[in-house]
Length: 570
Image (cartoon, rainbow, N blue to C red; front, side, top):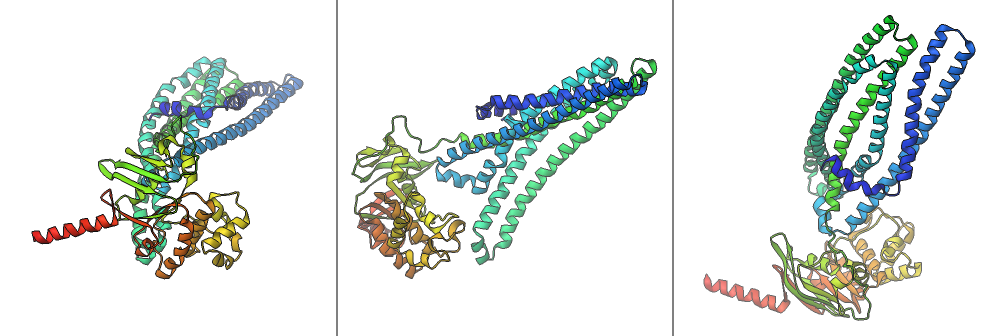
């Protein structure tokens, strides 16, 4: 993606900022114009001081010079403040839009990119995109206007000397174009390496306990080190380009400045320029090359920002898997039977679910068993409308999922994930996560039903105890019971339990069975589990194997038949 393509893609983010953008740009241009005018007036001040014909005239010129400088300073200050305010509003708008879009993507996509990479795209990449369409453009406009103004002022002073300076402009611009192309390539490598580091750090820190338990700290460190080496190489390449560009521009500036000085001194000796005019001309040309270098640097920065825009666009181009149809309606009615009919789902060339049919009835618990990778969690994600099947239908009551809004489906379906999610907030807020308006009495009631009230009251501040991210200060059973209390409080008619006893010892697992029964009571419940202790509370047991669904009896008969057939063959 080129900088121009990226600019067109993200330009709508500036919507509503046109007048503020124009005001900030105008103030910065006024500051620029005053700087140029101040140098012009300064030449008269110097010539007046040297001639000493009129002290009053000199004082007036000096006062005018100070006034112009003051206006320039004020306009520059407020212009920069307004520009930053616009910049931050645009970043906020971009981040809100990106985050809202990402939240509608299938969780599988989140895992594919990695948490660290997602964070990088929401932070530094977004700031680079804002520079591309906002502050960078403003900086470019001001710099090019400043450059043109300085060239015009220099031509007025002495067109002969100014032409010496202008002659080098095409060469310097060609140099910036050359370095800009190289910058785009190495920045892409740097952004990728930076995202890899973020993913590696996040993965290592979240799995630190396992790494220590298995003595794999060196392995995690080596993984991070490899990404760090790649990032270092990319940053060194960037530095070589930036330093090389600066060196070439600096040397060119010295050469041209020397040529300008020779030409200017020659004109003073010829009487074509006064000393004040020569100083003013030197000032103009002394400002010209830094502005030209700034223009070139903006060009390099825009090339880098285009890479970040490419990474943001990659996310925005992903189609949300649960997008509502235009005619979708909210679910209503008292029938909360969930019916899965001939559902097939493919991931690339692999068929994850193959013509799966299943009914979940209110008041009944259906246990879903099967080997890892059989598609159990995929089926759960379909019931929560995280994804949509390729063929077949899923119904809630008499309504097809495709005819309903995703929000209303999830209002009626509660997922208790395999790894309970604990937020960095209080215990009460964690329980009320699905119902933020719940009263303290309702929160405590849900905790009692989940057998969580006793251990919560033993915490330092009870229900007001602040938990850290992922609830690492709690045991696995305590985290699970808080998650169950959250599900009980939400009180939705359909319940999906994904491995509720995973990683729990016998005593803890047995302790949550009764809360599980209470949680499932009266609901249409799908219980995904490998645990035979949990299947005992189920009314029906079905098995998913190789993407196909069978009853437990059918699966046992099929495996028995296969075993007998294999024995006969032997």
